[in-house]
View 1 (cartoon, rainbow, N blue to C red):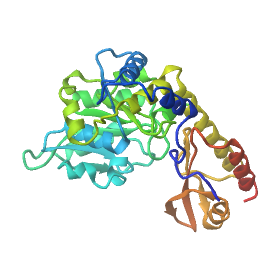
View 2: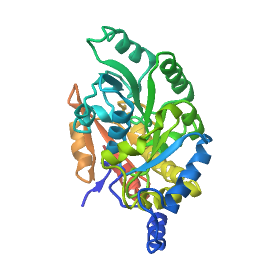
View 3: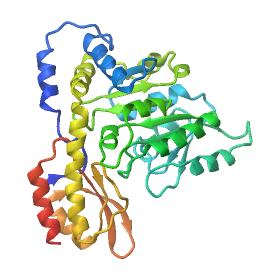
View 4: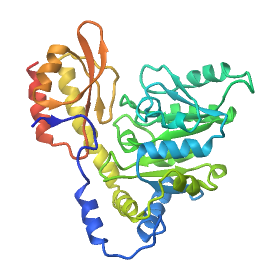
Length: 342
């Protein structure tokens, strides 16, 4: 069987989470997130983001988080701006559009939105009431191409959004990987200060399921649980999410797991670099995108699973290789040997 580098959610859950779920299994708890475990997880995250006025909600998955947040925050005539690589553009079956909200997909080279990208959309949508009204900016950190935002970039986006009455929403499905990248200078406290809404992903970082939605802007907090319920995101057994996030947050396990995943990806990155192989983007998280010939791809795919991300000129393609909290270090070593022999 081939070893898979296709994604970071192929494995189940970290053993500490499974042990905690078993240990707490017989505890009789309130439903729908009112359980002790969810409340403990929320208290832990509130402390780490240093934002006591924020409101935190645990929800099952990333697409559900994006759908619930965007549909809750926007009025029917309002739209959202995103990089064309953004998850809401291509990987959520039109979930946002299905709620009646247009997504403005902006071409980008590295997965990141900049002020100039946003201003061009605003300039093209001034014929009110005949056009939709851009109201939200959606970014991912880490992005779908493995890059991450720094403090200066996020601060510039947030200031621009405030100046232009836009909401800044960060998809944090891989936020732990962004925070622990060797080139990162952001903290959770920074993100809570420089976004209106973000979420901390568990599904791709050691949990069975779950994302922690953080609404930083007090004006956006009212009635969010109504939207969760309406969209099917308010779990009767919310304890399942609470137990998991308590374990991830208590001793910063979520950072340790992401740091490990990043380190394994950087081992592979160095092996490709040593062979003189270029990359679609220079990444420091758990996703790398080497540009290989189809012959090289075929050779590596004989033993390993990964996606061809983008076809390119000259019989070449960029591939996506993803490591996880559970990636076998020996499997990485074996792949490095294959890379050395390309």
